[in-house]
Image (cartoon, rainbow, N blue to C red; front, side):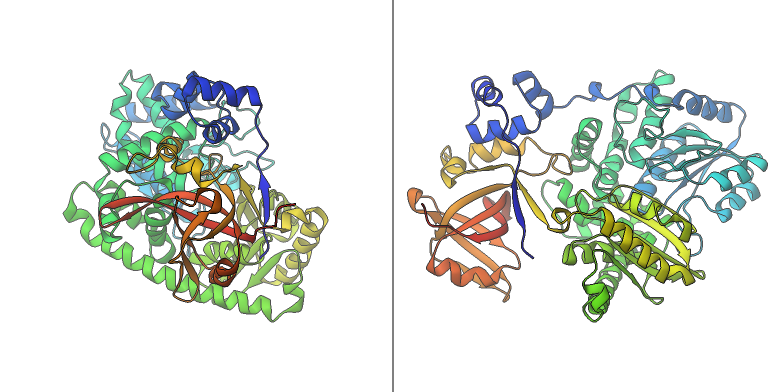
Length: 577
């Protein structure tokens, strides 16, 4: 698929010059820093070394004082408290976090994860019945509940209070609960992009602060927050950056035994990044809820000993292998369905349905289809007599709003700008497909339907390797300190032009390129690179020059660390005018 190369806006020259002088970095690094809002030495220091003290006061969040007071009231009255969370990584991490904190000083706490298949997403009737049958008078709902207006009203009638810690977009009506959600209109909390686990952490911070406890008492919980931030693809900016920075520190230096066991089973060694969280830890935790039960994930995250986690981690790892097989098979079926249907093939959106598809992987399949056709995509299957599914979007298009315009055909829905879940009667599928396509066609632009690569700046190989005195170049060592990378602070992307084969480039497994590259102007510098799925460029590289877009990453092989370019796209170099 042809991709647009889009350069980030060039920062002001004065800002770049100031950073070069005050921080002592090269021009390309100064440009990258200025693009991230860093203007001077003090701001660079705050960005590179965020402080826990920069976290916002939890009591700035609407409802926090009421939530803390209600929990302390429950504890004083010996009430039973139920921690209720969604079955994905954000939900199970949230439950593990709040449950583990409260049970340090109070025993009458339980937790509940709804069954993905029997109950579906969020607060359920079965969950409320469980609370009622077991005399829970307070439910703390995490990563769900903002739109559970009717069910929370029913719980209220049965004498059950709710504290809702959620980050999903509120509907037109709010629940009769203490609501901690920075996205509600009444909330003036300075940062709006916390994940569900992040809001659960702010609740715990609020309790800890009101009790006069030191922050060190809850520092160990930050690995849970970090994993949820990575898994839920929230922006790693502002407060999320601080939580992710220190959460990675906990994950790399003193991870809970459950994470340690999963990493061992995945043969993952070395320093962990957000990418490792997204592709190694998160899928395994998610697999528990997709294939079996999210309760297994919570058990893993709460465990204290190897004996407790050994069996669970093996089971979860097996579930992940099953999940990968289902993901691949269903994606292939969906791609074939689109290819054989001219209406689907030529549409500006994708809505596919198969009653036999596994509900646990439809979100992953929606992401795969979006990567392939690059348009808003919804994948549906049947569950409990209804069509249920997940939506994924493309850059700049609000799929939540598009689904909202089709809400007359839905039983329920919820989500974010780029991802959502929905439930509708089976007989409404075709009408929904047509209406969704109409809504998308009316609002989406041609630009939004073309994938783009956002580029930080153009550099030469000399810019990277000039200050290399053995080992890793200073350019990369400084750039690495911009981490943790993720949405809102992505790993820098560069373009280098007029690149040629330095000899030794080859095709791997008929589809990938392992490259050795150089530029004529700096022929003494040879750079290693990998280009996944781009074997078709091998011949072009033998007979001419190419322009490459890439990120720079470390390659650790047998204990030897070197730099490697990970190529994202290639174009033929244009001859100079």
